[in-house]
Length: 290
Length: 198
Image (cartoon, rainbow over all chains, first blue to last red):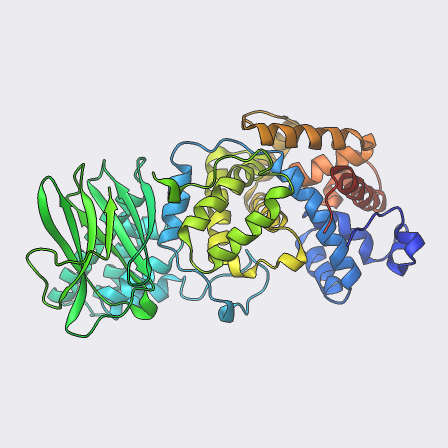
């Protein structure tokens, strides 16, 4: 719908008739985020019951979007890679879960340190999953072995949860997520997305300066129980098994880290007997030139 | 880098209306977890997101952090984009501008705000050199030039400066009612000048 403003009065919309009264005069200020938070809440209540106002806001927002686009700058080196890499390990919100209010005002459930402690108490896998769900800052802090891991371990000790094996598991989790973060934040990090033959999509973030890559996949076809997916690095230095890929919930896998990456390597995904193999079986379900 | 990691080669109309439908379709793919589509969305909106966030916040490090959060929010909540409510560009830029404004209002100390006032009209530094961006910028500048001085000042202070209409009224020494109507009139005129509508 094209609103011309000048003809609004002629069209007879009563909310356009006034010159200074009524909440609709705030449309311009609202579209520019120039309302205080209290005014914003009140105006949004008004908007909910005023379809014409919502239409006007939508059309004014097209204008402000152009004001924004006119400020485009060239991002600093590494910015693109950091954004794309962070997305790869950030869980997307599902439509059914969106019961919260306006974007930005929300504190996602499970984002609290307490949730981290609970996840840690359920074991390293739960903790890694919790870390993977966090915002990139929390994740990087966690991965850098700083705040979260130390706090989680500290809390586990304080609550008497940490026996020797758990401490070891936490150490492993900490070391693995630290390696993942090192790849994701590397200046030369490169993102690759490939279809997996047989179904699914693999996403790889690799860094030659870190000699490592991070692998995640979604929608992998389930294998018979006696088989598992296995990841390989194949290249001039020989064929090296990376790891068996644990079956994830909803076909989502990883992130897993593959270190020892060398120039000329390919990343290969195969289906192998559940115990693993010494060399990759055909067919390759994924072959990525690194 | 191979072809599937990159968006289509630069199309001069990328930022203009012709790219709108394309961007909306890419965001639809992002909602289904398509990381390659997200890379394409980044190419189209990343520089603008960082640009508007930096224009409002000023501090480069904070701006980068907020811009990254905004882009990740696009990734996380792509399913919320509703093409019947407006363009994809407007959806992303609304997220970006609001997040930037919320940041300056929540953390900025009075002294810093005063310093920002003094520099609120630093114009077109660090801009991208891409042709489509330059054309877009010229068009916006021309349309801003078609506003009355008061309209232009209210838009610049509110949108690029991140001030509330009440603060704009104080800065310009005019009644709040006048500011409200000038803001609305200005955006209507800009919208018509830029030829954007929903």
